[in-house]
View 1 (cartoon, rainbow, N blue to C red):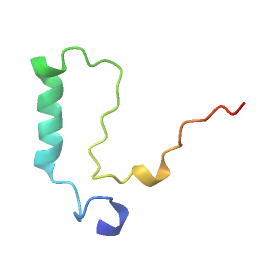
View 2 (view 1 turned 180 degrees about the vertical axis):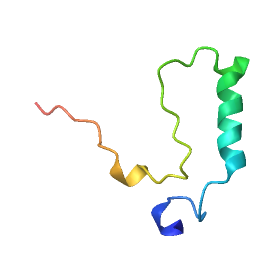
View 3 (view 1 turned 60 degrees about the horizontal axis):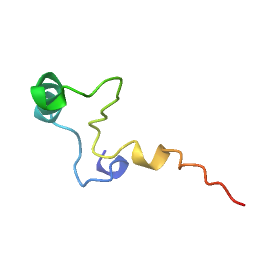
Length: 56
């Protein structure tokens, strides 16, 4: 499974998910709305679509 992640970890630990949930429930994230927060050790990074560039 480590080959699927950018970070050198075999999998994401439950405590990592818990930290993200606690942050979202805290006052520190009070202005975060409508966002996806992937806690996946970079597994989605190879599949992201780069921003389109405008050429003149």
